[in-house]
Image 1: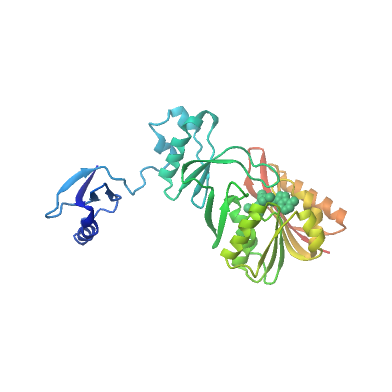
Image 2: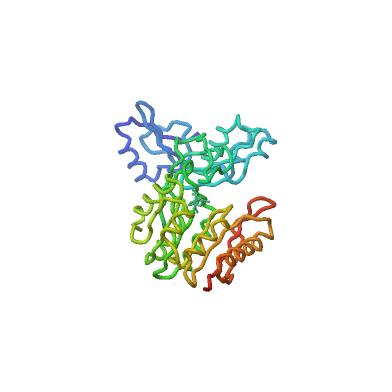
Amino acid sequence: MAKCVKVEKKNGEATRQKLIAAGAFDPSFVPEADEKFVYFAVKKPVKGMKIVERRLRSRERKFRSIQEALRGKLSEKELEEVVRSFDVVGDVAIVEIPLGLQAKEKLIAEAVMEVHRNVKAVARKMGPMEGEFRVRKLKVIAGEKRTETLYREHGAMMRIDLAKAYFSPRLAFERKRIAEQVGKGERILAMFAGVGPFPLVIARKQPNVEIAAVELNPDAVRLMKENVKLNHAEGSIKAILGDVHEVVPMKFRGWADRILMPLPKGAHEFLGDAFLAARKGCVVHFYHFGPVGKAAAEAKGMVRKAARKAGRKVSFLEERVVRPYSPQAEQVVVDFRVLD
Ligand SMILES: C[S@@+](CC[C@H](N)C(=O)[O-])C[C@H]1O[C@@H](n2cnc3c(N)ncnc32)[C@H](O)[C@@H]1O
């Protein structure tokens, strides 16, 4: 309960100003109105104004964790099952609801919004990433009915639709790492470009580049084109709808100074295209999922084999674990240079 001043709506703004001037206005509660009156929380009594008690919504975060927000609403056993980590992209949260808790999905989603006040919609994962486009089914279970959002990364703005095109905020470090290596005037082939996060972050850091961003999913290409405009990057990025296997042999033989291959599974099937597109000295960023501790060696084996087949020589520059995937598997990136 908050101590409030109750005034007729028509006097609302004047009263608010008076309370602020008197140092009595309490901004930690959200003012509320009914049909006739408006209620402002106050820190101290004000001469000539009657004080009433009313339940107002606090602006302060009441809970530090989703578990805390759900205490008393779920059993201790259920609380243990509630997932602790989830992705927030822009103002949309994507959560995984354990099988046994599906009847409580709304409660859980509301707790997410309670703890993360910037979240305006909560979507539940309805399955794994599927198909060539790597999208998963989502169901919005709380907040605004949308999966589209605006997301900012390293100064680049992106419109994203989580139900229509792949996007992962977990690759943000990779995008920055690569953008920092890009030199003036480079020609970059961004394979599997999605809604354009790699090209956009690169162009933001180094606008003097030519990026060919190839993507198969028409929804992703539509969003990428919007994002290129949104970031005024028309001079640096060309979004191309198509299959890397077809576009590269047709348009980009011997063209690229740098190639990005962020397809988590199966990127090795495109190494032949990468060698076709690579000029002498080209740097390739090759992503691969494999067994923990062995994924990088596996990736390098694939690169050596494809290089032999293409009659090219390579030298390895850097390798790093991008993210753990499961207790058994991890995603790695291996950077290499095409020597001749
Ligand atoms: C894991 S996502 C990467 C998206 C983006 N680079 C990012 O970081 O958000 C892989 C993308 O590759 C696209 N894709 C799959 N096969 C392709 C192909 N043969 N040619 C072009 N794009 C392809 C999918 O539609 C998907 O958007």
